Image 1 (cartoon, one colour):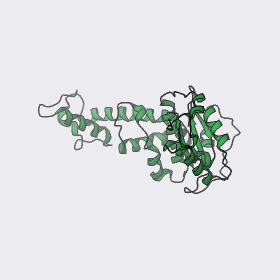
Image 2 (tube, helix red, strand yellow):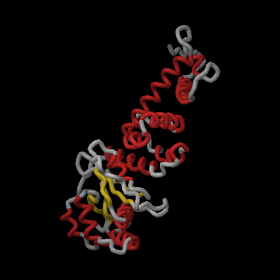
Image 3 (cartoon, helix red, strand yellow):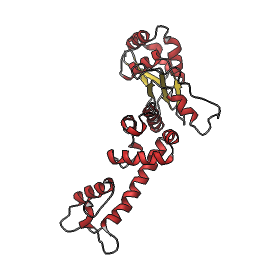
Image 4 (cartoon, one colour):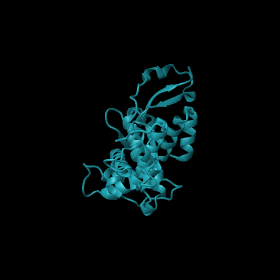
Length: 272
């Protein structure tokens, strides 16, 4: 039923099609595709309304796969309405829907209807990190016996697994995430007693996919700082100093052992 008029360029028609899908309620006056649709059977706004509803429903389904905990927390109907508003503000730019939804946490942080759920945006950040970790490349782990050949261990840089992600929050987002899993125990309650303001985070998490499944690992402030330094390609010495400045009892031996066993740290470089 879409029959481009001779005067319409393909790029213009594509832009008009997307605009109609995003425009909300379509009318005779605001349907941009009106000149490119055979209206003998159905009106332009009627046909584009079908495409609009279908597109938004498919994108909403994709968001529900990425943000299942958010959907549980706010309910199905509210989640769909929220997604509809988000989609109109942030349209997909990639044909791969795995790339879509990163901005959802920022959207929730400013969305007036959920301002009373202050933790919601951070839960969304955790879910996006989980999503990205699950899709990341597999890790090639270094033969750690070669570490003995390093002349100055303090100047090397540790390499982190592609699937690692770091999250910090003022809220117990890992507990919120856990109690909303299908296998969660019914009697578990989220402890908000250690909640701080947004400038004084109390929850620090590392996400990693050591095999087929992504796991969420609680870590300390010092460990979080250490891994951030590794992300920034700082030396082992710099990472230790920075971590110890954040956490007086930071144990580099225990932390390194843990991160290597979890395959968060997968190798090293520098100091050849």
